[in-house]
Amino acid sequence: MLPRLTHATLLRYAGLFTWGMVGSGLVMNARFVMDASSSPLPLMAFVGPVGAYMAFGVAFWLSTQSLGHQRGRVWPIVLMLAMAASAIAVSALTNSALGAILMMVMAAVVPWLLPGWPGVLWLVVQHLPLTAVFVRTFEFTPLEAVLQSMLYMGMSGFVYVAGLIAKQQAEAREEQRRLNAELRATRSLLADSARVGERLRISRELHDLLGHHLTALSLNLEVAGHLTDGKAQEHVRQAHTLARLLLTDVREAVSAMRGEERIDLEAALRTLVEGVPALDVTLDIESPLPVDDAECAQVVVRCAQEIITNAIRHAQAQRLWLKLARQGRELHLAARDDGVGSDAFTPGNGLSGMRERLKTVGGRVEVSTAPGQGFSIDIHLPLEASA
Image (cartoon, rainbow, N blue to C red; front, top):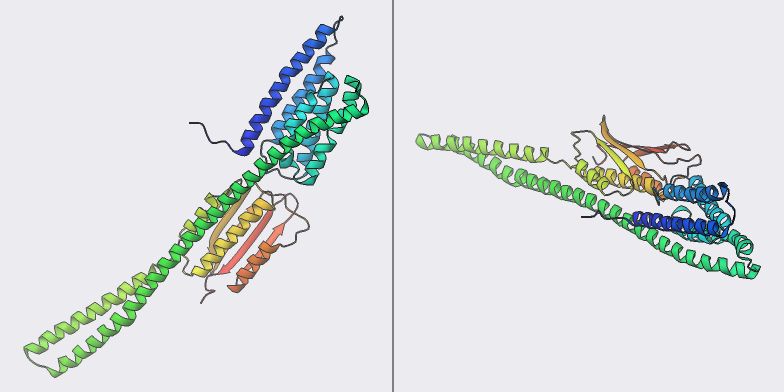
């Protein structure tokens, strides 16, 4: 069974296939030139077009290695310049419109490398040099050359829209996967909280009702033991002993149920990171790590969600390290990514909301970043916050 291909992978393979077909056109053009020429052509007449053609293929391959997850802004523009220059060179050196076809291939990845109106402007500007190629090669008038360039621009625009739709669908699918992971983690946390709450309710009922009645029964049997004599007193004392043993068993059962009031925070966090797309998350959790407070566990999960979201949307990170451990009476969540970092960091709504959430339970957050060094976030949460 063939593996399921993503939008980006299909786009890449389709572009490489079209690029290969342009290579066949390059061969046909070379044979036509050789047949039309009466004298042997110099070697450079073939090396130049082939070199430009191969340069386009290499730039396209590099640009589609991680569509939608390029780090930085300079590298995508460099690749786009290389592809545009190579396509124009192919047309200029072969006196053909093969470069315009290569620009159609390039148009599929422009929305991923330069989204929005800058990408549309780039698509228009890169076709302008083709006008000069058409005037020189095919002896078109300037108006005819412009119309011909607009024709290829229109076809490239169609490919651009197809690439834009593929990008939007890929982003929607990744967002859906992320939200599903958050939903599963929240559901796991709620199930643990409900289980802990139910055990706590049962233990209180046992302690308050059954324990109270057994204590009263024990006191009454003790009084009855003083008021009776003979064989009846012996039976009363045995009943008194059994009542005390039963009361001890109830207290032990209540203590055992209260001792198991632990929320499986590790399971919730692992469920959260398993569904994260386009980000390699390394999770290190101290074991065992019992958490009694449901509110504390909820805050940790929400903070982890916000850290993952920021690493994907803003930090342009490819890897994220999360470490959760107990430090004295505090819970410490440390996060570090390999994103681009920033020298002028301004907290957004997500980080501000994280600080407000931590403030309600007595926690704090520290953020450090630098250009090229990613983001580091340290969260300290007191385990006795609810108490």
